[in-house]
Image (cartoon, rainbow, N blue to C red; front, side, top):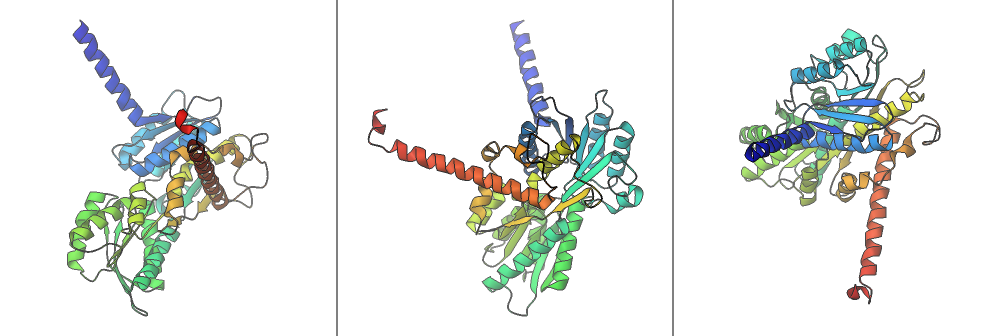
Length: 404
């Protein structure tokens, strides 16, 4: 009997572990309920979700996060259908576009009376053709927020070109020979970033030897980069639509006898912690990021919308965009501090709200301005924390400290 009870207890614990791996919930609050559908369970989307939890706690939002562990458009659709089929539906649903299913998700949510806010990628062309944009044919699709992924692809290319010239990998008037790693075929973010690459290569002095899909996978990126380096020994730069794939490319380059950061440059997107370490070591030239805060910004906009402060009017459309920023060896120290969750907890995100008696009910700010505000607040939080540590260290070194 005791053995049976022990087995039941172990099974129950495993169920709990599995549940909490799948769902992250902010502390119950009296405010509106929001469900966020994470498109996969990668390190990046855990960062996005954890940041959202911090913002939701400050704004008294009931946030539930569901991860799509299968990372497939149809499994993503099933999760959305499960949420929208609940007896107690959320007030708001936040998700990222996946081609071929997102229009169905938007339409179903609209029918169920659940307001939707989409994030992180551009609106797919098929969705635009079918239902238009937010508030056009589907009144419950209230807004969209995404980084300028085309601009990010363009900026990444330009920075690689500039660094290559400084290192002498591309002489004055010479084209920079590069290969490129993109994401999955159903990803709007991947398509937009590679469009920026093509635009920059055409306008500047880069020559794309080949662009391949590595499906956001570090392992697949390593395999494909190994083949590309054998096929094109003249490669001087590797453009990657994500940091994970960029790290795989670095692995392959080192195995091929190259010295990333010296005879070949690699750049990516996402500000992933391991990528920032690679920047510090000199192996990764650049990473574009700060979109890990995009989900938190979406919650801020939903909070104010729910309390009567709409983020859109006749002069401000419900589609918002912001620029990604580069992390390089010049600023990687600050970026790393911004990415540390302990500093997120030291910021009261109510200060950015327009709701009366909560924040500053002033003029509406752009998405870029709000992201700058988030960034500056996190830097200040780190500075205060570092100052306290410094004071504590000085106090600990006083003559009497050894008597404690």
